[in-house]
Length: 177
Image (cartoon, rainbow, N blue to C red; front, side, top):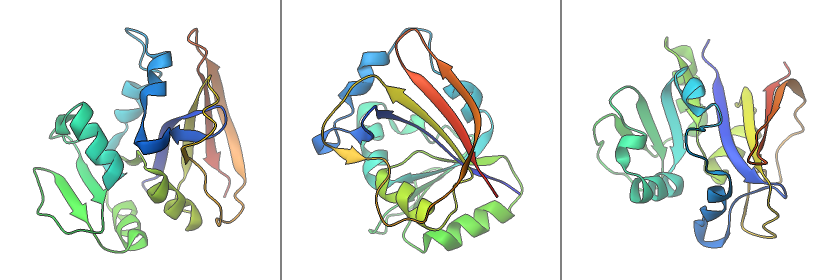
C-alpha cells in the first residue's frame, strides 16, 4: 500500500511561513548544490497533494512545472472548482476519500507539500505515514504554524536525524502503527 509523506521546512519555533505566507526565511539555508535530500525523496513519489495557497505561491515564485512536470499527478486541495491543467487536478471533494482512493492504487508514494490546513486535516484523520521536517535555525515569533491544535495524539518512530553546514537539521519519523 502506498504511503503519504510530508517533507517540509519550519522555523525552530514551529512556523512554516511568516505572516502573509512569506517564505523568505528559507533563503537562510539556501546553498548551491544542496537540496537537503529533496531529489532523493521526490524520486520515490508519483503523486502530490498540496493546498491551494501553497500551490499558488510556488507557481507564482517558481512556476507550475515545479509540481506538474509530466511525471506525477498533482491534487490541489481547494474550495473552488477549476478545470484540470495538465496532470494537475483541482480537488474540492472529501480529503479522506481522495487519500483512501490514492493509497489503494498502485504506484509510488504520495507527497504532501502543505499547506498547514491540508497537513492538519491529514493529521486529524491519522493519514500521514511519514514526516521529514527540516528545522531552519530561526525563531520567527509568528506566522503559520506547522502543527495546529485539535488533532489526536500520534506516536512517531524515529528513523533518522541529519545536520547540515547551513545549520539546518532534518528529522525523519514514521507513524507508529
